[in-house]
Image (cartoon, rainbow, N blue to C red):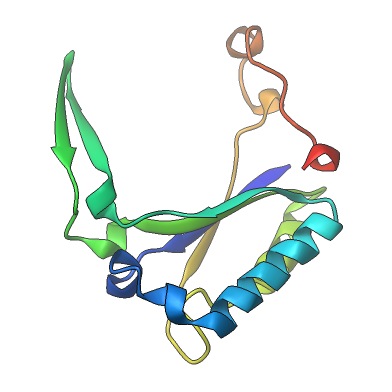
Amino acid sequence: MRFMILVRATPETEASALFGDTALMAAMTDYHDALAKAGVLLDAGGLKPSASGWRIRYAGDRRTVMDGPFAETKELLAGYTLIQVRSRDEALEWARRFPNPMGAGASAEIEVRPLYEAEDLPAALTQHRPPQPDAAQA
């Protein structure tokens, strides 16, 4: 089972202000090292501020590109960690260990969502799907 731990953006992450917090960076490094040593880390990364990105809005066959930055930080993501574990309970235990993404004492929220797996989809949709990496390859 794969789960994605999503870190919500804040005005600070949109300003790249968290890179100066060496204690937070050390805590995140230690956490991701523990995930890797346990063989459950598939990927992790921080996302650049929305000013570096764009959105594509669909209206039927039309596509409209909108460059960032985007005003509503509550709708943005600042980072993610992708893990592969045996159960929801194991994912919950790892998520509980996730360091406060805004630093000690700050208010923050992460979201954890399971990814669809091949067995969740109708067989017709999985015929041409590339193989997924397992946790041992992470």
